[in-house]
Amino acid sequence: MNKIRACIFDLDGVIVDTAKYHYLAWKRLANELGFDFTEEDNERLKGVSRMRSLEILLEIGGKELTAADMEKSAAKKNEWYVEYIEKLEPEEILPGVSAFLTELRGKGIKTALGSASKNAPLILERLKLNSYFDAVIDGTKVSNAKPDPEVFLKGAQELGIEPESCIVFEDAQAGIDAARNGNMFCVGVGAPENLNGWDHLIPGFANVTFEEIVNKLKLVNLK
Image 1 (tube, rainbow, N blue to C red):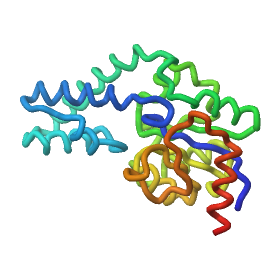
Image 2: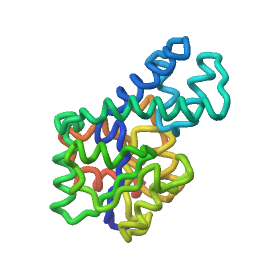
Image 3: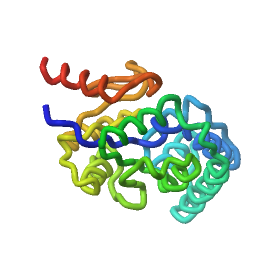
């Protein structure tokens, strides 16, 4: 097993739960278009780009929009979402994340954020986490959505670390697939019934240490 030299994190559902704000903004848009959008419907949008999410939303509502109106609707949804996340506080960082990032800093492990969100820098700023990341790859820096590994490969590249020495932390199946496609180790964050293809699975970062994860990955590779 290669020595782990970097950790790359997805944002939504891994560092902070902004999914609820995405849901509120999409629901608001659906209501404006004349139909309801449930939390169950919202599961279909997890890890999906903004425009594809809008296409799914319209499919659910049985609506069609012109290309111009789709652009306007996507922009409106994002404006509402930004309104919500501008009120984010550091207290909303998910349990155990700050301690885990601090441990990585202490051990000299490089860190990157790899998120499709174009609002990632704003979210990190609101959470006061900027100083914990050596590189931030967001939706403005990539052209291919997960499961394409572009976002994670660019993260590794900016860190100067080979993909085989990186662990990706992901809560969405598309992200796990992206990590595997990029030849990286992957730790799934969530429930086993929702995710597959990971090297190790954690429910969250509470009481989780870097050493514990590395030891689990060694066991996986010795099987």
